[in-house]
Amino acid sequence: MKRMILILCVLTAAANLRGQMTLNDCLIYAREHAYANRIDRLADRDAAADVRLAAAQVMPYLSLSANGNLSSGRNIDPETNTYDNKQTLASGFGLNLSIPLFDGLVNINNLKAARVARKKTAQRILAAQDEVSIEVVKAFYNVSYCKSMVAQMEEQLTRDREDLLATEKSFTLGTKSGADVAEIKALVASDEFSLINQKNLLAKAYLALRAGMGMELSEEPLDLVEDDPGSYGDGSDIRRHPKIAEAELAVEEGIYTLRAAKGSYSPQISLTGGISTSYYKLMGMNMAYPSFRRQWKDNMGEYVGVQFSFPLFDGLSTSGRVRKASVALQESRLRLEQTRYELDRNVREAQLDYVSSCEESVAAQKRLEAEEFAFKAVRRKYELGQSSAIDLYTSAAKLATARADAEGKRIQKIINMLTLRYCKGENLIRE
Image 1: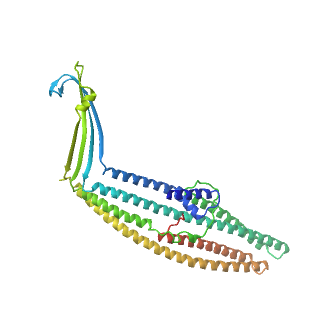
Image 2: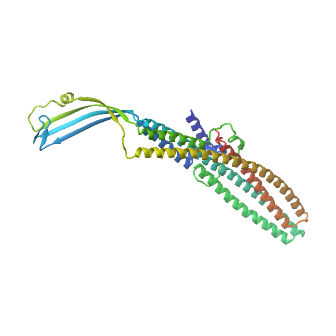
Image 3: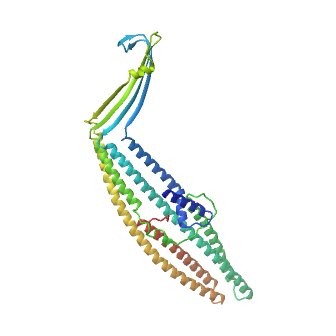
């Protein structure tokens, strides 16, 4: 069921590439196509292979053996156990089985550690995917900011060109000076330069977004649509933070690894059994020998045994592994505490950033309204000849700065909100 939902999400994202793409579409696409995520998914396959290798150690071992020997010259006759100079052909076959009965639970604990390690790898992959998602969020809203700046520059250029035409007419009528015309021309030239620069920044923003999502690089702009940012990580999908989960699983893995290391002190008991047969023939002798089928049956033998091994001295290698596993476990526990501490710090910092961005956004909006009112007043005075072109130029620059700041604070507020929700364990992607 989960696989079907995932396929539908991917198909939806792929379909949206031909039309509009929301932030959620970009996040889903990046999750499946970003190179970092694709590489990380290979780590899960590697961890699954480690689980299979660990499971193989607790399973019975069955082997089939066969050998053949053609000898000439001085050899031992197996019938008389004396030396002769006959040429002989001998072959043997065997089926051997070994079943581990007890090994101090070393292999069982290794298997449990491998399974936990795979879960830990899955959480690490989720954390890495979340980091990619955060970068895609930033790139997405950077495109929105650049698009807003381009639209603002185009609007400002159109307005200043209208002012230039009006100023040139006034100069012809003698109500404006040549200095006023020059100042407005300089303002139009500045607008044209700013527009070219902003279009270049927008193209780079699109390129960065495509690269972050693992999309084919192209200069064609994406049709992006901003939807409600409050619906991302809205608290409906609370989960344990992947970094915390990874650190907790690392502690659990360390416990099993330590148990496996201590289990090497225990004796090892295994059950063995098998069957074997052989075939023998003297070459170059006119003698009648039993057929291969008859010798296969007559020489058949079976055996069953129990093997017991008790470690007495292994050069202190087992004690060394126990010490290393103990130190690794202590390190994992400290890293868990550190991860919780850093995540708590990140939550508090993100909370401060979000509150600050909310206040700054309100202040920037008030400043924008004030600058718009001031610019309209200066522009009206300029039309009536009560202010100079320099005053108009200065007021227009302040208005442009205020608009850029207001848009930047709006974008930063959204990014800080999504970052805060992610730090609290909320999922950014809507399924």
